[in-house]
Image (cartoon, rainbow, N blue to C red; front, side):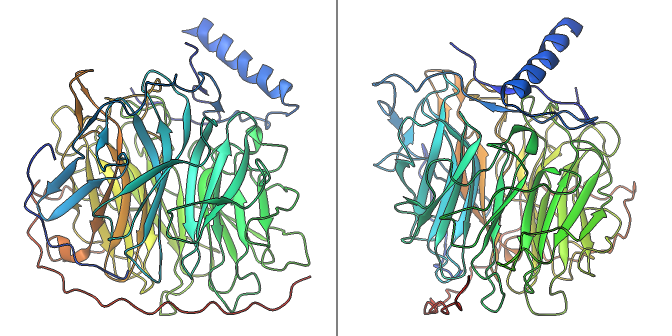
Length: 555
C-alpha cells in the first residue's frame, strides 16, 4: 500500500506506553577528504494537541508525523549486556562498516539506531562524525542523541554514548564548518525545542552551545551554515522546521554567533516542510521543501547574511519534482519514503552557485523514483525533473531515501535505497550515481551494499527512520545509512544499525551517461548486482589545516 500525502497527515510519531565472518582487508587509503472511527479519533487528537500547544493548524493543511514522548528510558541493566562481533559488510570493493558499536568495537545486541547524519572534517577527511537516533532497546521507542566518530576515514568507529543520558531526543542533524568544527542540532522531544552542540576534536566530545531548547526549532528541523570566508554572513547558522509543531512559533531562525544564541523565529512563505537548506558562495540562503504532497518550493533569502536586519524571503519558486511525497508507504510504513534535499554548488567553476534539489517521489501512485531538478540562475527557474535511477520503469519499485551532496570540484553525488533487485520488492540495497556536468547527465547506477530487510529491528516504530545522508569531497562521498545486516539470535530478527560506506566514481563501471532532459518510460538495462572491481586508489597526502580568517566586527 502506498499513501501519498496531499494536505493530510500521516500517523503521529507517538510513543507507545508500555564480521561474524573473517574479512580480507580491502585497500582503504587514508584520504582528504529519517477505519473511519480510528481516523476520526486520530484527527481529533491532532486538533487537541494543537490546541494544547496554543497553535493553529495551517488552513487546508494538517501536519507531518509528530515526535512525541512515550516510553521512559530503558531500565538499568537492559543495555549493553550482550554483544557480538561488529558487522563489516563487503559488496564487491565497497565495504560498509558498522558505526554504532560498544566501547570494545562490538555490536550491541538488542538496540536500534537510525536517521544517521554525517559530517566530515574538510581539512582532514580521516575525521568523521555521525549522529543518529539511539534506541537502547527495541522494546521501547525512547530515543537519545547517539554519536560516533572515526579517525581513520571510517574503517573503525567509536561510540562514546549520547549527548545527554536519559534525555528524550530525536531528529539528529550534523554539519561542519570549513575549518573542521562539527555541529549537532538535536530536538528535545518533550518541547519540540532544539539546541546546538559543537565538537572541536572531530566528534570525540561535544559541548552544548545553546541552552537546552535555546535554538527554538520544531519537528523535522534542519540547519546549515555559511562556510564562505568572504561572505557577510560567514559562520552564520540557519535553521528551519515544521511550523505547526514548533517550540514556540515560526519556521525559521538564525544564529550570528555560531549557535550560542538564536533570533526570534519568523515564518517562511508557503510554510515548507520535510526539506533542507544551503548557502551559496555569495551568501544567499536557499530553502527547499514541500507541502507533504506534490508541491515543492525553493525559497531564497538574500539578506539573511546581513546581521543588521531581520531576514526576509525575496524569491519563492515552484519546482516540479515529477511526483508526490510519500509518507506511510509500504516500504517504510511509519515514516517517509524520502524528504527534499537541497544543495548549492560552491565550486567556483562553471556550475558555481547552481541550486540542486533531489527527492524520492511517487510519479504514478505507486513506488518512488529519485528525481532531480536544477537551477542555473539563482533559483529563478528550475529544469524539468530528471529520473536518476536508471532501472526499467516500474511503478511498484521503491527508490527511497534519495539524497545528494556537491563536491568542492562541482561533482554531484546521489545515493538512495533501492528494491530493483528484490523479487519481494522489499529487500533494499544502497545505490549510487554521480554527475560531473551540473546534473545534465548521470552515471549508470551502481549498487554499493548487500541487500537487507528494512522491516526488521523496529524499536516500537514501524520505520527505519526518515533519511540517510552523504558528504562529498573531490574524489568521492562518505555515506551514513541504516541497514539490518546484523542477526540477533535472541529475537530471530536482524537489527537496525548505522553503517558507513565510502562511494566513488572509481568504485563502479566507467560512466557513459546519456542526457535525459525529461522523464522517459524507455526501459534501460538493469545493472548487475555485482559491481565491477575498481582500481586501488592512490593514497593522498594530508593537507595542512588552513587557519580560519578572523571575521570583521559585527554589531
